Image (cartoon, rainbow, N blue to C red):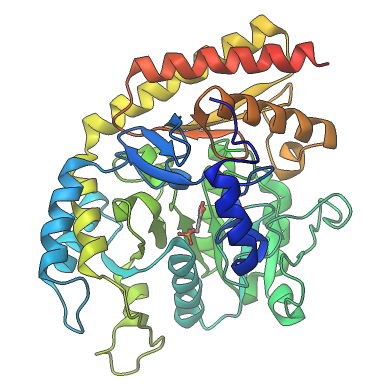
Length: 440
Ligand SMILES: Cc1ncc(COP(=O)(O)O)c(C=O)c1O
């Protein structure tokens, strides 16, 4: 089960890759030291690399494969659709059926537009908010990841050196060369701090098109937002003519109608992605019909013209339709219970090994932190160099033991998993914690 050696096929592939791909990869998340493992095939909750090593997959392509790899029903429906064509400059019945299915899951999903990724869904949601309100600015939580649109990625990865005073967190660029105009139009608020957040929003009230929120932001610590914080933001947006945009690209998996239902709120717009593509690229923006009207090409004054060559292509919508039909309320309940079992097991293992660590999460996802207490916001979740080293050691150990995790030490479950895989994961984590303790 050990990581590939210098003579492996992965090493050979990587030597070729660095000549044609920057850093040898097409997405930074797959990079490992000394080089990435290359996937050969996947089946259910297992993935096999080019060396022939099979591991349990708790990454699931960054939380997008809710039914694991090569789900038979998806393979069959997509194969049938592929034989009939993969994309047309015509509308398809499947986009209508799939939009109906998604809109039926939450009464707040009145109209919906399909796009090609979570990034694009967030971009369209933010631009729709501007088009609807006529205001330029957006507010977002410090450290929250919302994909690669210029405005959405501001302060995605600030550090103590540049994040500024907590009363007024700085708008920190991610990419070098981000225009000041983009930074000036993004207002940063601290997570789970209603008092500070509302004070900052008040200062920008007249200019804010929307507040963008993920109710359990992964990079901010993967801890569900406090109800008080969410209620304060919902209330503030309603009172100030600003929209509440929820990023449920990941959290939609936690509840049948999305995580927003457990807070008793309805977003004005919701961005979806990842699992709703059934393993294929997709995104969607959905919400209030009067807001979605900005996208209506038949309206007298089209406020936001938007198109996409592969939007609502029948491969992604077919796969997504099958995936979401199968991910019904009992399936969600079962998977969430499995995650609870894992969280309890890992928490017990932490106590038994005496490590200063904890587990956060909700629904069918969780994250292990090398922190004694659950982090409440991005600054608390931020890893010291020592904690970073421990996470790296743990991830390498888990990989060698046959477990693929997201590189923040986050696990996402898929429906082929059972208690057997969960208990194996817990045992491996315990071994990993013991290794950290023994290495001091
Ligand atoms: C919460 C959240 N929003 C948006 C995105 C962007 O989605 P995509 O990678 O499909 O562009 C991600 C991706 O990881 C995400 O986790």
